[in-house]
Length: 70
Image 1 (cartoon, rainbow, N blue to C red):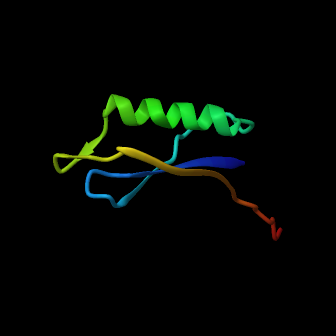
Image 2 (cartoon, rainbow, N blue to C red):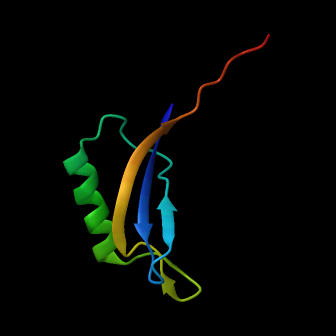
């Protein structure tokens, strides 16, 4: 299963990654960019009084491959 990783810069210009539990696995670059811009604009997430997802930085899918041994 692929996971979508959205990387932002937080209010302190440090990386903050958001990994949604459920995401379509065929999103386009433009769809992801638009969603990240909306997340940044809404400013919904904070930690210790600092905004987490301020500036969209990058996005990628990661995939875990499981190999059964028995």
